Length: 152
Image (cartoon, rainbow, N blue to C red; front, side, top):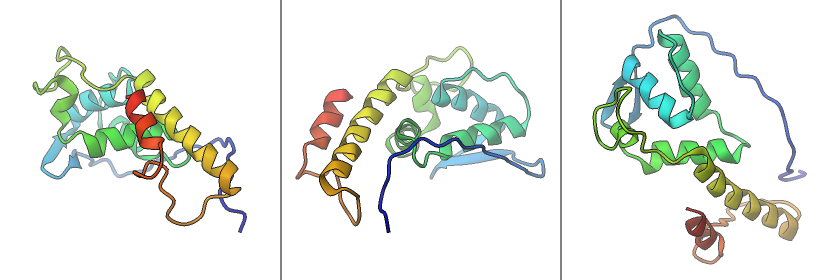
C-alpha cells in the first residue's frame, strides 16, 4: 500500500431520516432534547441557528461527527465530546438558552490546536514517507504534546 497521503478533497453529506429525531445523547448521562440541542450545536459549531425541527439538528450533529481528514473538525469533535462532559459547559454551567454565556473554544483556538496536529502529521510523513502502525505523535516520547499545550 501507499500509506498516508496529504491531499484536499471535497465531500458532501446527504442525510435521510423518518422525522422522529427527538433527542440526542452526546455524553453518557445527558440526553438532550431537540430544542436544547439546537442551542448547544450553535455554540459548538460556531454558527447561529434559528431553524426549527429535527432535520436541521440531525444535520448539525452530522456536521460535528463527520471529521475524517479535517483536523479542525477532528479537534472540535474531540474537545466537545471527549474533553467536555456536559452540554451546559457550553454555557458556563447555566441552563442552555439564547441569553446564556458562550463558553466554548472559538474557531481560532480550535484551529491553533488543529495546526499543531497537522504539523506533527506532516513531520511524520516527511520522516517516514508514510505513516503505518501505532505511531503516536502526541506521546510522551515526542514534542507534539508540548506544542499542543502551548497552542492551547
